[in-house]
Image (cartoon, rainbow, N blue to C red):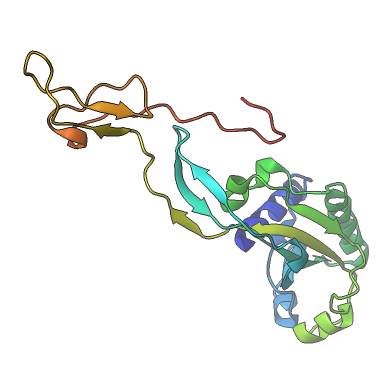
Length: 234
């Protein structure tokens, strides 16, 4: 999930026109040695804190369906995590850095969530909103001076971006759907002496299984219609 958020953030910043103007968007840690090797204008989006939002931890589970609508697995609820990124700009002059930082800030603050078109992997599969909080106050977040001290660099202009993303639950394969009913046979014979055909219980419109019972091939019945979000039937 973390790498999927990384790429979505990079994609959002690329769409702002940064790369078109020759600016690199990277995910590196902005250490002193890294900064000394910079030879091009750069916007750095560095992940430095990951913690779970326990208030959103759920119970129960959900169903995973195949292309035909059948349940093929059951999945535990997703766990939600807050990922905090430090966004900085690097250029030869402070005014250029501030211009790049302003462009990155304007792009990220305009989005309350990562656009669906940029989500990949499990984030796209879950179909849940991945929220963004740009340059907002976070009382439990590390102080900027502490972050820069840990990186071994000097304090410079930056802002935080917090992403609230779901981590997909564990999937367990479900048993195949029941497509045949129960057949009851008796030793009773009809008036002509022939055995009475088996009687199928509960399921209607399905032929007698014949002498092979359920070992023979069976036609798969259509899956029941699934209820859409909001309670409406498709």
